[in-house]
Amino acid sequence: MDIILKLFLPLSLAVIMFSLGITLTGQDFKRVVKMPRAFSVGLLGQLLLLPAVAFLILQVIELEPAMAFGVMLLSFAPGGVTSNLLTRFSGGTVALSVSLTAITSLLCVLTVPLLTAAAAVYFLGSDAPMIDVTSIGIAMALITTVPVALGVVVNHLTPAFSVRISKVLSAVATILFVVIALGAVATNWSVLIANIAELGPVLILLNVVMLLIGYNGAKAMKLSHQDSIAIALEVGVQNATLGITVGALVAMNGEALPPYSLASGIYAITMYGCAFVFIFWARRKTKSV
Image (cartoon, rainbow, N blue to C red):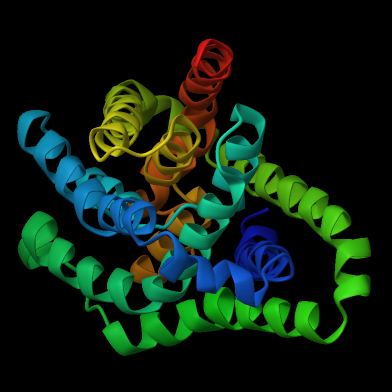
C-alpha cells in the first residue's frame, strides 16, 4: 500500500489540478480585474490570514513540533477543487471561488516552499530536515501549475471537448481525493487513531474559525452573501491532498503519510463535517436574504 500511495499521490494530485484547469477560461483570470475587492479579500485571507490564524492557534494549543509543522503546511495549501464544489452546493459565487483557486494554485509554487522553510526553522529547530526550496518549488510546479496550465490550454484549443469531459474529470478528481484520503487512513490507521484526539480539535478549530472569519470578514467589506460564501469556503477548506504531498516531499523518508502529513490526512476527514454544517447554514440564510 505504501508503494502504491507514493506513486499514486503525485499523479492523482496532477489529475485533480488538470481537472481544475480544464474548467478555466480567460474570463476566470480577467475576473480578477473585474471584481478586485472580492478577489483581494479572498487572496489576502488565503495567503496571509489563514497561516497567521494557524500560527496563533498553535501558540495557544501546544502540539508536538512535527504535528505543529504539519498544521502549518496545511495552512499554506490553497483551496482545491473541493472548495469549488462546496461553493456550488452552498449557493456561493462559483466564478469567484474558481478564480481564487486558480490564482492561489499558481502562486503556491512560490509561497509554499518559502513558508515551509520558515515554518520548519521555527517549529522543528535543530531537528528540521534540510529543505531544498528550489526542489520543492519544481516538484510543486510539476504537480500543480503545469497540470492547471495544460488544462487551460486544452480548454482554449478544444472548448467543446473540454465541456464534454469536464464533468467526468470532476468526478474522477473527487474519487481520487477520496481514494487518497482512505488509502492514507487505511495504511496508517494506528498512527491516525493515536493522534486524532490531539490533532482533531486543532484542525476543527482552524476550520471553524476560518469559515467564520472568511464569511464575516467578507460581509464587513460590503460583499454580497454569495461572494462571502465563496470566500469563506476558499479560506476555510484547504487542499488536503497538497498538504499530504508537501509533507511527504519534506520528509523524504519513503512513508506514505509521514508525521508532517498527519494533519492533512486527518483534515481530509474532519473538514467535511465543518463544511457541511456551514453549507446547511449558508443555504438557509440564502433563502432569507
